[in-house]
Image 1 (cartoon, rainbow, N blue to C red):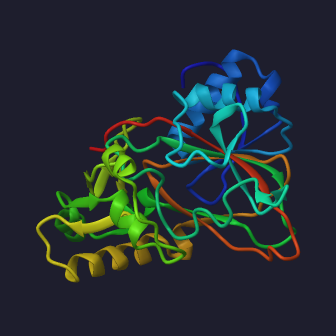
Image 2 (image 1 turned 45 degrees about the horizontal axis):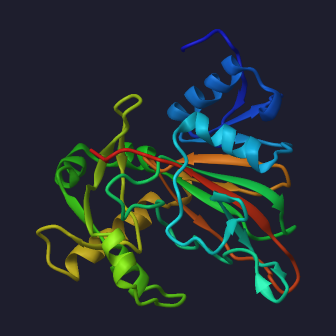
Length: 284
């Protein structure tokens, strides 16, 4: 470990994730903040509860992990903060203030980019008493559970990711891309088995939505294999279910996890979350 700071850590589930207690992010010293980042890199997800953070403090914390990443769709960003995206079903002056039911369906963020985001951070400002849980699947545990023969079969397979394919085939409303958006988001190719740069651990880095095909494998065979692997990775034994509380700051590592949001009774309850991303690197 890089410094002598000792954090109070509880695993989110056996072998995965870290909840750190007794740290107030805005007032934590530099050594403690560095230790939080180090803990994140080795645990797949990092949770701190009971935080009260301004947008500037949130951005400052996110920036410890890497440079903030912008959002492809800008209409739901926080005014004055283009790197903070609002997830909400609230409306102001008859207009939604944020994206609603965004991120439902197992995926990893920005997988359609050459350099997908490293981590996703959510800060809970208002949460329903039931529903709206976030589920995170541990892709390293899933990889380790494969037989050596199966690992060998999957190693070397390449996934064709496409933003255009994703947006035009979404179950909850397809969207024809503008020429500008299409040019900004060309198709990319990423390995199915991804190596984590922090310690070399391997992840079964499959995803839904953006994956158009497995290179060299005809469809529907390729897409059927994708579905089979997603079902495998997202079994309950590999999955952590996060029940939100106001003040939660949860960040997960997109290099070794899949995640999905869940729905809630939006006629009865409101939800407001701030989402931030840190830039990542090219998968290998």
